[in-house]
Each structure stands twice: as structure tokens, then as C-alpha cells.
Image (cartoon, rainbow, N blue to C red; front, side, top):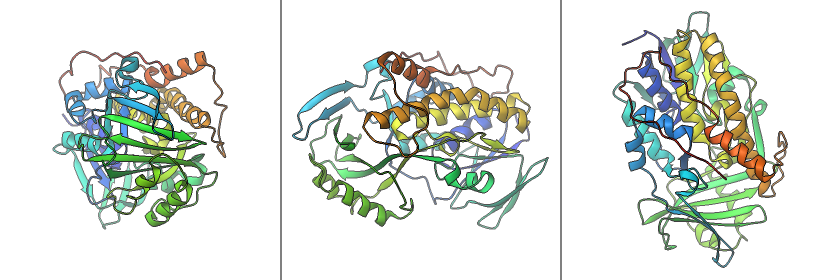
Amino acid sequence: MSSGIRVLVAGASIAGPALAHWLRRRGAEVTVVERAPELRPGGQAVDARGVAKEVIRRMGLDAEVRAACTDTAGAYTVDADGKVLETYRADDDGGDGYISEIEILRGDLSRVLYDDTRDGVEYVFGDRIAELTQDADGVDVLFAGGDRRRFDLVIGADGLHSALRAAVFGPREEFIRHLGLVLAFYTVPNEFGLDRWLIDYQSGGRSAGLRPVKDATRAIAMLSFPAADFDVDYRDVEAQKRLLRERMADFGWLTPRILDHVDDTPDFYLDQVAQVVMERWSSGRVGLLGDAAFSSSPMSGQGTGLALVGAYVLAGELAAAGWDPEAGFAAYEARMRPFVEANQEIGRWHVHSLGVAAPDPGPSPELDAEGLTELVERAINGLELPDYAGVPDSAPPAGPPITSSARP
């Protein structure tokens, strides 16, 4: 079953391989290009809640994803002396609470999606789109490695700092909204006695935490601090480490011991907490998906869910429109935008609740308890997945649907 439609996807983290899965099932010939030389391991833990769990089921990957989960039992918030203040369990709120029942390291989810698609999708690592030119019938792409190829559609799933978005839609400053917070993640030795429970200490808008992983000899450090401006290049790791030390050196709890491992960690990551806000996620035959189109920020807890749901909807709407980009992209945006906006509001509310003043906060995040409950429900279960019954699908049914009930 092939439609003859050739689609190029930029980015092989989560959104890209998830989209490749659905495009292939709908009959497209898919190429995924990734500038990194191989899949990137590790990374922060990501979650799937509500409707995103149903997408995983429809992908036929529920068992594989759950087998790779972190197996986190829950979370404690503590004071500077380590005294437990609050307890959250993974089975709270039907598994859709503060700690999700499906919690997996970004790199592990990426590997599951890659293993699922690599036999039917062309992956090109260590390369990137250098130039592209589109006309009424297709897109001519020049790769940095020198190859020239033509595709019917090109999709950017290359993250917050999307190069494809910058090339087609304009400079990153036009679309990135900084929320006034900076996050850092990196692997440390588990010298802290961590045992399936996340521990988090917060004070004055800053936080330090430790997250368990399946390998009990390791843990993931999580640090955050307010920053009204952020001008450190996301590729300058040494400058990022200096900034982290400067902003967190006097923080209490276990922070000094956590900072001791900054220089010997294999997977240091630091970046601004930011959202991407765009009037349109497509231009002609080029579209965007995931953080490249509508980052909700890590503070929403829903970035991965948006990527998975968006991949399902984008492939389905394009196929349902007979691969007409104008109709397919328009239907994708119409269906996804209310869901995206609810999740972006969650991200802004979370930052606001920490007492952090965002330089460009967007709509007011002030909510009472009832309003927050309603917003959480819209952000987790607020999109009804179409069945796309009339659209080609090369995979067998994936079993009974997953239902969930989310409460804050």
C-alpha cells in the first residue's frame, strides 16, 4: 500500500519518528533526516497522559513503551532539611497526575519509536536541510551533505530551536516566548539513596530535584532558576554550566553535591523555558510539528503528549485530504489548536505559580480551583481523536481503547 507521496521529516527525537509511523501507515514514503550522528540517549523524563496514551495504544506500542518506563513510584516535595512536605503517587488521578503512569526518558521513547519505524522508513543521520525551494507541485531540498532530492511535503519536527522554522517562517525571535525560567537536566551517580521516588526542593522560584531511573546506580538531576533574560547560546555547553553554577551555588538542600557532578556528566542539558506561538504551522508544502510548531514548555508536562497527538492528527488529516497540503494542514491546525492552547496555558500557569515573573507572559494565568480543574481536563483529554476510518491504514487494530480521568 503506497500512495506515492514522498515526505521528508526533519528531526528524529520523538515527534519525527512518531509522525513517520503514521505517515508510513497511511501509505507515504518517509525519509527522516537528523543532524546528530545517531539517536541521542538519556535526557529528561517525559510523560504521556490522557489522549496521548490512546495514541500510543493505536500505534501498537503500549507494551513496548510501558516496558521502557522509569518505574517511578511517586514524588516527594521536601524542605531544606529533607523533611517531606507533600507526597504524590504515580497512580493518582488515574495515572494522569503529577507523576504520570507512563513516564519514560526522552531517549528511551525515541529508541522505541525508531525501532518501530526503521525497517519501513529511511533515516539519514549526520545530515540536515541546507536549502529548500517549493513550488506548486513539490519541494526541492539540498542537504548539507550535498544530495539534492525532491519531496511532496516537508515537515519540521526539529524542536524549539527549529532550523526549518527559521528558514521558512522567519527568525526564532518572532515565535519564541521566554517564560522567565531556565531548566537544567543531567545524569549523576545515585549517591543519594534514591529508590523509585522523585525528590524535589523549591524555594524562591528556584528548585533542585533528583529523579530515579531504572538503573539504580544513576539518577537525573533537575535544577531551575528564574532568568528574565536568557542570551546563552543553546549550543555553548561550557557557558551554560557557568551560568548554572552562578545561579545555584548558594541554593540549599543537596544542591552543592548535585553541582559537583556538572563536569563529569555525559548528558548535560540547559535551556530556557519557552513556548512557540505561531499564527500558522504551515506554509505551502512545508509544515511544523511538536515543539517546532507549538512548544508548551517542559512546565506543562505535556510536550510529548502534544507531539504524539499532533503526529497522529497531522498524518491522518493529510491522508484524509488526499495529500492536498492546503486542506490537510488547515484541518490539522483547526483540530489541534484548542488542545495546544490549553497546554500552553498550563505551562504559563505553572511558571506563574512558582512566583516567576515572565518577561512576555501571554494571557493571564490566574485561575481558581475550579478553573484549574477544567483547564487540566482540556489539556489532557480535550481532543477527540478521529478514527480516520476512510483513510488507508497498514496496521491491524491495537486492542481496546484506553480511558483515563485527570484531576489536578
